[in-house]
Image 1 (cartoon, rainbow, N blue to C red):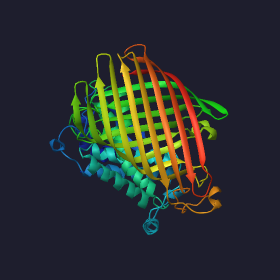
Image 2 (cartoon, rainbow, N blue to C red):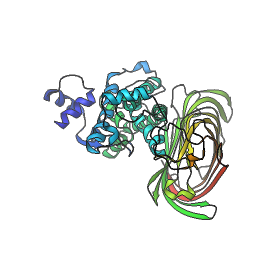
Image 3 (cartoon, one colour):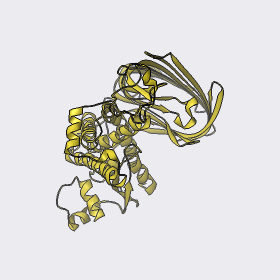
Image 4 (tube, helix red, strand yellow):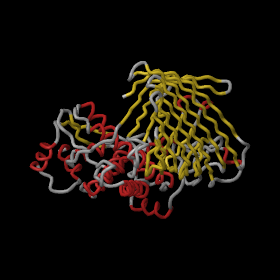
Length: 501
């Protein structure tokens, strides 16, 4: 019965559910087993029942290459709508009947109260608000994107999924920041999920490892890839992965951390024209393993539209619009060495330059950002699970890299964020621990100026294996309206070994 439900769900709920229908679909799929993909609000995930390929059967990727015309492919509107509703319904059911979470006890009255109350600024953890909500938004988005719908249409599906959850499936006030992060941040994360999952599914081997990796990257894309018979032509992809041993230095303290990280560069930022969103993107993720497992960083920049300004003998200059998603969190290493910052909703105008000679290749990029939603560590705001301020602002980013004959390389990145927190509350009482669900505050009224400098030197032992040395610097200067100026600076020094693929 469970198998029949899974087949009906991935069909989009259309047609009669009978053995003949199920058998016809299973014949089209590779040899399969059932897998439960589980995810919980606030703790990470969403229940998802899917069919996992274990054989070497051929799999078709479902969404069109962004460099090709969308009109070439059949667009599917109903299936992703049902998938978005199914994701929310299963998460709510898990929260309500398995976890028995109070916020999942809903009724018509709770929906009316949410509509009457309106949207507030909530008080969840940084990881919940600024990473896992965008992740769930990425599931909504990828359901539509992998059904051959375009970037803008897929954003609408992410918005619909977020509105459904915020208004109808919780008895807590709907959240402004969740709506923004899930919709816009979900688009950035979802596009990365869809592209990387599609790239894996275009792999001719179609081994179990490849299928599992594609499934974990984007469950909805994996499901839809078995529904639509279309072959994606993926862009070039370069991946670097490494393990690091890090020493974290603050005034008077030194702490150690062990972490793993990966960087993916998809497409070509210096192509003559990237006219479709995320035809080119770069994404980096870092996970701390010791002393406490946690997400350390997630940095993504994707091209929304670009055009060539100048083409010269050894390179080119590209002008474009870009979407950004930055996330930094060091909570695993203690309060003294904490830095917290995220900008899930950000866009920029940028210029990218490259130069190629016989001995050395260099790249440079400059981005001027507008931040629609940002979060930065607070020295005074403590309400429920939140210890950071939210707000809007501006920023800039500079990237420089040089590679000498594939023997040595240097990478330098500079990030600046100025985040203004406008909606707070007055008085010294804001320095006290609070537990007010309806506070509706961005945090302490302030202006936070944060600078992040990341530098890395690589030495290649072979074409694929390299040694790495990094120095990263974090500096925050926060000017509060009701408190003295606060400053914090942290230096990280890392040594690692990695591979290029």
